[in-house]
Image (cartoon, rainbow over all chains, first blue to last red; front, side, top):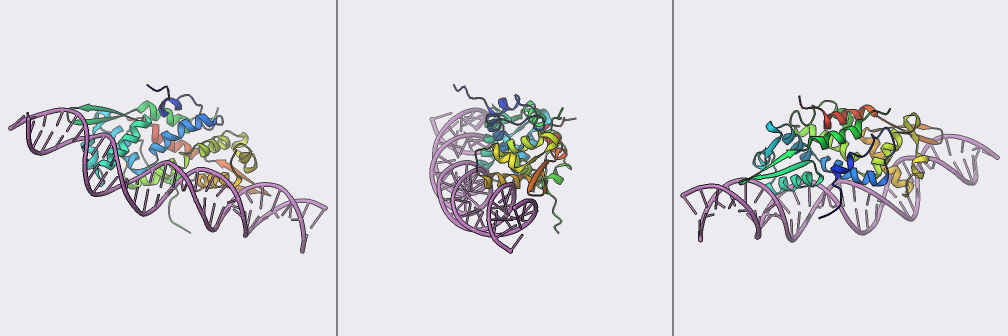
Length: 116
Length: 116
DNA sequence: TGTAAATATTTACGTGTGTCTATGTCCTTG
DNA sequence: CAAGGACATAGACACACGTAAATATTTACA
């Protein structure tokens, strides 16, 4: 197995943007997380999952929410999963994705944390 | 002049991700903001400016913080400015950029806002 | 065991992004 | 008004990204 940190593990280690300059390694760790969110489809996927009842949603429901092909949705879900923003669980034929809210909150405090 | 909203104006109007699904127009308004931040160089630029004394920094200082060409830094600053994350002010020969902290805070509460 | 449904992977393609070099513009000062 | 410094713009190029079509994989069930 790899010793690499997922992006979501990286973000928890940094003070807010307004507090201190980010080092290059820190920035390189955090950027992939933001990149994963920086797409209209993935933003909507994330909000659909995160606001869904039980904090999770089945891929079948997510597919229906977009006018995009199933492989395209699967691709976006994979990116969010690899970034550490979504957890994946297979139950029978269906796959459920769950939002990692602590990852979102770490990211939020990095971006919007207070200066002092 | 244009009637378009800048991304930063868009973000203030949406509930947190975990609260309700984002509409397509909402997501398309917010994604550019995240995209602007989703790059290691721009993340560092943003944190350099935001954490700098007085909340602003001169381009000349920012150039020195990277091993990139001056036009490349200028390009990144332009993207951050167009997204509404940085304000631009020319004073004499120098240009100063200032972080729009309320934009960062709106973005943060969108991403990490509590569910209920 | 074989068939259908749910999801993922592969491949391909047009478009967008990050970077550089070269050049332009604006301001200051001699 | 000429020259130089600070910053922006334009053009070019390699690479990454979003999407779709075709195909593979996994699971349930008749």
